[in-house]
Image 1 (cartoon, rainbow, N blue to C red):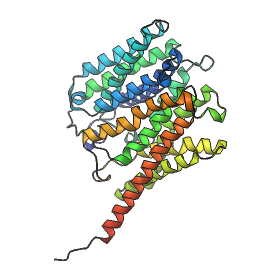
Image 2: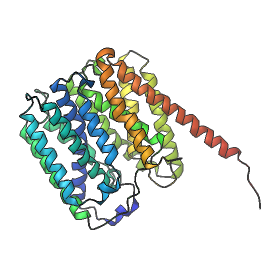
Image 3: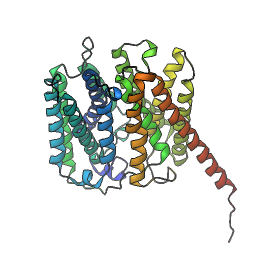
Length: 372
């Protein structure tokens, strides 16, 4: 819903900014907490990333749907409350035989909650002011709530309190904005705009794999978590600040799409090297592609050949949660190669999209002009 220009009718109050910070907090915490719990439960199937994949899949399926847009604000509040309750109960039931099923249930409810938040948001983080600081603040709160010596999320009651506070802020903001209806257009993305979010999601989802793909850098778990938070929440803020000074335009938006695809291709090529620099670039380049995706101009006709909503969801599921589950199944046998293969696939698709866009441009340049 942040794609709509009608959002400018809503006053940007402190509650609007607080709700956007809460939005990012819920998103970042979903990636980290669900993956960590899957690792601690020691699942032998898919290396514990099944909960992250379930949360991601529910988000993709429900986000932008007519039901998610049209439901009452209390449904959003109930989803937040049930998510918080499930998190609290799971902490005391980790040794119980039903812990795996409970974690999957929490993942499904959390995914539904996240989808509702994203669908019903009337604002965009990158249009609320000169600097998109909301994601950085949310990442800082997650980092402060992380018990670095213990290495476990939600072991401190402070993070439980923060999650409860975010649930209240999100509900209050949605309840206030419910009197300003906006027509929901549904998701209509093209393949080139699905690749960067898939790459970023695969990197976040693979953080807790037993054979973490970036473990070869010699970093501790705390450093890897901090790096992933910085890449997902910090880079979009920096990219939005740079792009604000270059000025938005239709031509610049199309150029940003091509640069994003090129970054995915280069990130896949960096995995052919064995040095630390190659490993860092293999993380950094797809993350830059994700940053450009977040703060791109969302005007009409910027992207070419959008999918229908069902096709958009299908491609997003295949390139995201399904590919993450495959990585989890292949990682115990093949180690970091599973992540490398997944990002290589996205790089190949990005290269194909670059060729298609170049061919369309050439066709447009050589098309005959009829003079009447």
